[in-house]
Figure 1 (cartoon, protein in one colour):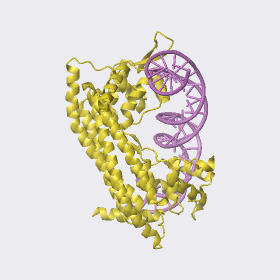
Figure 2 (cartoon, chains in turn green, blue, cyan, orange):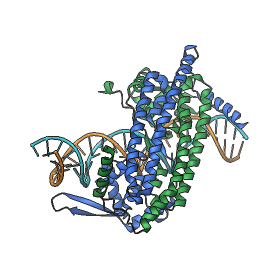
Figure 3 (cartoon, rainbow over the protein chains, first blue to last red):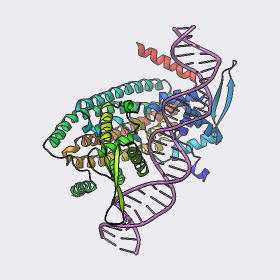
Figure 4 (cartoon, protein in one colour):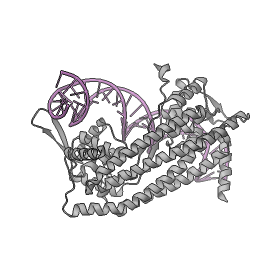
Length: 220
Length: 220
DNA sequence: CGTTGCATGTAAGGTGTTACATGATTAC
DNA sequence: GTAATCATGTAACACCTTACATGCAACG
């Protein structure tokens, strides 16, 4: 089973192998830096502790090898290198692994979803904070995309970083559009509650009825 | 400490409380359905098992209460209701919880990042698949946004779903732009490797040097 | 009368985080 | 000399998922 499915490696594991595929010896510390310059924009940057654990696991299954360098002085570090088996597995993964759907956990949007529990001013504040975040990320991605241009062999990294740059620009615009929609929502919600129109039952039956209606319309 | 920080509730916990804040009795099963109609687009939908576990936890700390209904026949279900303490905690959260940055795990982009390990055709295939995914999500979010219009009190949910609709539209465009960039990247990368230009060292020193350069330029 | 939907839960495991602990080296 | 960076690791735990187990009800 193992050779057919490929070894059991996590996404983070593949990412680390990917870094090492640029053929060099690197410490866990270096790889953390690398993820902070690149992956962080679209995949997050794993904690040091996870990187070290992951590297050990990869070494156990033979996808990487390591040696300890005692750098003249007393400070020692462990340098990792991808093995042939590692490069094989990685190439197979890059080519054949199924495309997993992106996973998103968007806290600001969660707050909007439950906007009826706070006041519109606060909600806009939350979204403004998100706009600032998107701004910052866009600038940082742009900066990193620029240094990726220095080296032709980093072409794919540059493409990913340019995507990130645009992604955060879009995130910003989306947030601004949402802020505009908020006024309307407030009005609609206020009217709904003030006119004695009870907060609607979220009961199963009620939902299903609406769903049926919408799908019937859809069917036309 | 507890009353100052608010009870220890996970994001999923708050989401469930949020659902119940619409004041009704709901089963865990119902709440799962609800998350699939809404949260799934920007926060994912938790597994049944997690919902049931979470509800038990919420009941233990007194934020929800439950009763078992033996529906005439033998089939029994547990109906949950938010308590006053729950509504208090939830309102405080909605108002005062810090805005967490969105978390993204974008598998297709990870694949692009390591595009040098596969061929450009396959990479485009992967991105096309992602375009199809974004299309599907957009359509589904649009549909759900429409049924949210039926009920004025769902105004905030509608805003969130409209955001999702636009988000997946943007995701699609971003992917198409990326596919265009891929040709250029391929060329650049091919040239870099074929002209004997060795895959660059990713060594610490090399990176840092470039970073310094870029930041120096930036400083101007 | 069989499939789909309703409804709940346990067990096990994986993935990841934070906090803690340690100590050398480099830059200002 | 002191702050930041380099460098590695352990322990604890939070969160979440899959797989499994169960059984009634409704629809065709």
